[in-house]
Amino acid sequence: MAVATPLIRAGFEIVLIDSTITPDFKNRVLKEVKDALCLGVSLVTGPMIRETVEIAKAVKAWNPDFPIVLGGWHPSLLPKQTLEAPYLDYIVRGQGEESFLELVQHLQSGSAPDFVPGIGFKRDGRLIMTSERPLRPLAEMPPKAYHIADFDAYERKCGRRWAMYTSSLACPFNCAYCTNAGVYGRKWNALSPEQFVEETVDLSRRYALDMIWVVDDNFLVDMDRARGIADGLVSEDSHFQWSIQATSNVVARLTPEDLRMLRRAGLQQICQGVDSGSPTVLKAMNKDWQDFDSIYESAARCLEAGIRPSFNIIFAFPGEGRNERRETIDFMMNVCRRFPGAEFWTNIFTPYPGSPIFSKATELGIELPTSLEAWADYFPRYTRLPWLNGREHDRLQVTRDYLRVAFDRIPIGADKRGKITRLMQKCISLPARWRLDHDIYRMPVELWLNNKLKQYTSMKPAVDAKRLANTPAEAAC
Image (cartoon, rainbow, N blue to C red; front, side):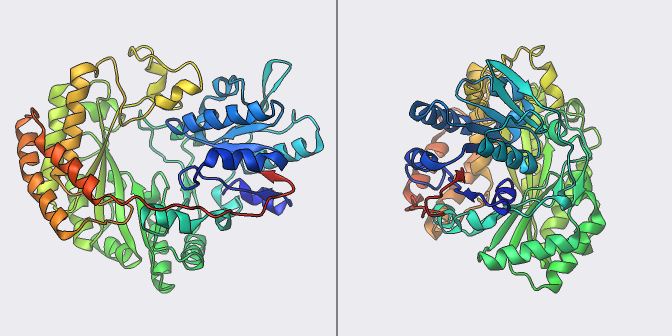
């Protein structure tokens, strides 16, 4: 939606195809490209690369000369390796709004794109990277083209009408696992409170949204801005709920009055990167500034204000052994027991391109993917590491499953569980907590029961995404 706006303003017609809501999306793409200028795909590292490769190969089988452009985090962080894929023609690096527009204009005119900053392309078997395009402040970027999204289909998929919104870029901290500095260079910049309020209120009312997920890396860097946003939303009588991400040290700076004001403004959840309960591991993550007392204080104040504190954990970071992992599990159990309503979400350490630790991956014995396709299996839920493989990996996965059922977590989609299901899951949670306390996971009958309950209560939505536009004369997809 971000890169669509400049194209629409320049007179191009856009068709947005989201594989998560579009039935038989592959044939839909093959139909749309027949009279389009190019196919553009935005992607991050991980499983979505698999669909990207599949559709790119299918398009090239139809027409080997049809231009395919990749943008987003993965091409920005690994431009050369990405462009080496034989079924790709161009990449866009970093902020793509201006670069993609200029590239499409060159494709339309048939001229060479050598002087378009921020892209890469092929010529006579050579990879050519143009000069870097300087980052622009977020406030100078055009508004996103939300009108080309199918919110009805998203609602059918997850049961709620919601959208993502970006109000700031980058983060002043430099956590060892984070890719942020690889793209934004830790140069935090943000929209004004007035622009945030105007855009989110309009967005929620225009598309009848009941929730907005503010995907800023660290929303609370500027406390005065956060207070201004809360004041503005209350003054506008906004009715949508919203959630944010922030580091725990800045959340701890919020006063009870700040939190109550944010709650009146509709703030429902604060996601915080705690990442480990071990001081040794936190130091290795460049997070020795993190204070456990402030995390407890944050959880208490959030819950008192009616805001859900949600914490992220990364298991198996280099330097974490069983003792350090035990410290983390004990910490999680302590927080959830002391502060019912707090929740944790866990992943396995995955060294992503652009993160500070990525340069040490080979030294750590990690075999990095050597092609675009291979990155499709790079996913933090299932990552296997030299020090986390075989039985140790399986044991951690079972532990993570028990952490999911031991304390109730609230999904972003609609909760369709009935009273009986809730009661049964509550009964399962008690023996799950005992297992976690005693580090005993043999014969995980509770997990089997929980999976059966999920099968019983799951309701597969009938998704029939409508066409987002008539067949265009010229379209960048």
